[in-house]
Image (cartoon, rainbow, N blue to C red; front, side):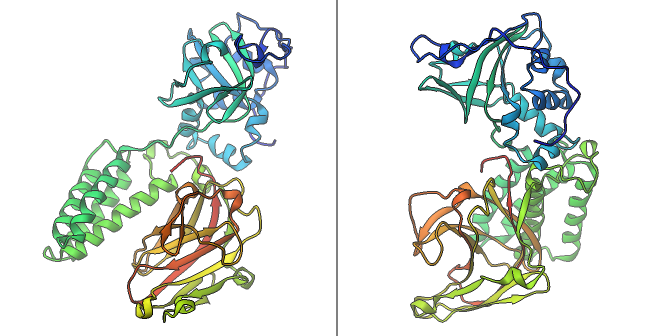
Length: 456
């Protein structure tokens, strides 16, 4: 695998660590792997000499954790081998080895380290163990194999002066870390939106404004002065241009600021200036790693897209696909006559199109109505798809990131059991199906398969 590497010492022969088969008497045994362990070597020194942990050593050094892991400890390290890092695409690995990616890299590495010395036999029988990242690793033992989260221990009990190392077959990603700003914004919307829907937009606007004032004036949300000034400027603009008694307009204007902050959080572009030392064009965010499936830059990108309307069931909605000069335009009108109300477009995609991705990223501009993204695991009409709704803001470009794990299986408006995997996606669809009549317009700039490294 190509990618950043640091100069390493020549590999030394290991002798003395045991294969997992000997971790506990009640598990099947396998031949012992001859290992040599220098009990005077620290964990980083042992990793350097192993010959199998070169990428891990580079990551630990870049993250600034080598000194900590050379301390007294003791520590237990679940060490991904070079082959394990080879499962990660080069762009994602390179993004972590940047100044801006360093905090994420540190958290990933700490997710592999446990305070205290735990030999394999100590781990067998435990359900879980807590890491230095404050996360939890689930443990299991099946057929002579020790499972740690979604990894398998390949070589156990490699002893060092300040702990023990277990070699594992993949890099384990920690749960997504939720920032205080995200908690505030989510709670604000959850409180304000129902009040707006109950007919009191003025009260909703007041809730939104109070939260955004806290963001602009507070110091606990990780924002630098530039971003706080931007929020404050937008709040002042709303105060000066929208009458105080127009609660509906103010609520939507405040909500647009909240949505922008949410999008920036998803993109990894919302950060304190003190950590923003990477170059502007660096692809240094896990969220930014991915591949474009459709960009609609030429006519070939429109081949295969087709409309499916409620006319097949007697409805009278309309819909069409147009070339928006580098974008796909889906427009028409929905009608509720004859129990209709939906219009959709869809396109089959080749097998493997979304392999390795855990999310779908859209760049869209809508008309303020809600739309649905759907994927199908079969080609043709099939039996329903896997859906998620997303809102749009009139005449504003928005990035929408949909974790594939959140897509819900539906058929004829009914939820069904089951989830879709990225490798099973065979088609992509957009629906307008919000039980409203009237014209609609959705403009799609791009559709991408991305790897966020997180779960929803």
